Structure formats: C-alpha cells, structure tokens
Image (cartoon, rainbow, N blue to C red; front, side):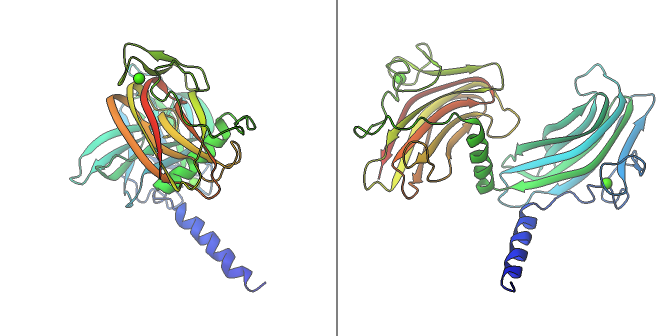
Length: 344
Ligand SMILES: [Ca+2]
Ligand SMILES: [Ca+2]
C-alpha cells in the first residue's frame, strides 16, 4: 500500500503539468486580476463555477468592449487548446459578421506585433452556459498569445468563466489525432490479405482509383506525373478519403512514405487534424494496431504541388500498413500523385 501512494502522486502531478492552464485567473475567482480593460464586472449571481464569472454589459452605443490577457507560449508547443464557458443575454446581430459576443485570440511575434487572429467562439442572442473549445495550430513565429473576451461593437450582455489555454506538444497532438482517427475512420476488414505479400499499387493514379478503397475520382487536368492524379473534393465537414492496405516485407525496420500533394482552398475543420492529410496506420493483421497512426503531413489552404516524405520506425509486430489520403472533416480540394513507400 505504501508503495502505491508515491506512484499515484506521480501520475496526478504528471497529468497536472500536461494540463496546466496558461491563463491566469481564468475563472475570475481573484476578481479581475491579470485581465486588462475596465469594461467587465464580476458576476457572483450568475457563474459557471466558483464564486464569480466576468460579465460585460452594454445597452446602447455598440462600442468595442473587451478585456484581454497576454500569455507566453511555452517552448515546443505545436498547438493550443482554448476553451471556456460563455453565456449571453440579448446580444444583437450587427452589420459585420464579427459583431458578436466573442472569445478571440491573437498571436503575437517576438517584436510584440499581433499578426494572426483566430475566433474561438461567436455568440449571438440569448444562450445558456455553453462550453466552447478549439485547438489552434501555433504559427512558428508566435511567441505570445493574447486572449480577448468581448462584445464586438454590439449591444447585449455576455458572461465568461473557466477560460483556459492548454499547450499541446507534437507528441500529445499525435495521440489526440490517433484517438480521433480511431473514432472516425472506417474499421478495416481483415482476412482477405493472406495469400501473398501485397505491395502498394497505383500510387500514381494512372489506373483511376484501382487498388484504393473509397469514393474518389481522378483529375486528368491537374496532375504531377503521368496523365492523372487523385482528386478529393468536399463542401461539407465530413470524412472524404481513400485508403489502401499492403504488407510489410519481412525484416523491414522502417518505412518511408512519400508523395506529392496539392491543395485548393482547404478550410480546416473543428480541430487541427481536420485537414487535407496523408496518414499511415500500422497493424499486425489489417485490424489490430501495433502503434499510433502517424501523419506524413497535413495540408491547409491553397498550395502548389509539394513533395512530402517521412520515415517511420515500424512498431514491433507490424505486418501490414494502411495509407490514407483524405479530407478529414475539412472542406476544399486535395490532389495527390506519385504516392510511394520504401522499406529499410
Ligand atoms: Ca468562476
Ligand atoms: Ca499520375
């Protein structure tokens, strides 16, 4: 029993470090300490947690009314998960889309200049306490982050509580991606791959989408190599992708996945892995995973043909791998060509 206690404490503190809230006084329990701007008041009557929330009220005038806090982004932060509870009462719709009750962030570079804004929540009308959460990729030049809680030139009442910002490393992001993929990706049907070693084929999409599973077409207008390339198109935030399962040769210890991707106006979905993507899954038999799914790359926005390549150690017991090319809950168009693998 005695031995269990230190272990338990270690586990709890490791978790506490990983989940550290970078926002100070995000629950408004120390009045409005750490927050800039004098437009908010404390609400002890209506709060989500603890003794207080912060409330911003404006009856007329539709001024910009905000409180803000600037936080430093820790080293090795790939993404930041921002979350908070918001309640509103009669927030008016203005002329501009940003005339709402708002939870926004702004990335700031090392010279102190803001250069990229992201919206975490936009609230109109009357809403009960609602939890909002978004995971935002941190731009490489960002050193700080400003959190803004506001009435964006609109009238009404808005309340905030439990405002949080959690730094996420690449490793943690991979784990999150794997968990999301496990939830969302179709289950692999095993058992049909026993006869002989199967190699990846038609990675250059010269034979339509032969060998690939899923709904997709090829483009004969946009391609990198040969006469055609894969094209995935989506107007909705659903899973649109294709995949192919093949065998790992005996004695192989690593796999290098390479390919050309091009994107047209890909809009990221709710989370960072909701993008154009090239992923690989490792299994012992086509269905039992031997390790985490790995991302070769995510693609957002509009990009010209770009070559991506990444080498992964094969997890112990890996006999099969599955390549996935998808618009994973993102909108836009993704092209792919010359997808290949190499073993070492
Ligand atoms: Ca509180
Ligand atoms: Ca081709």
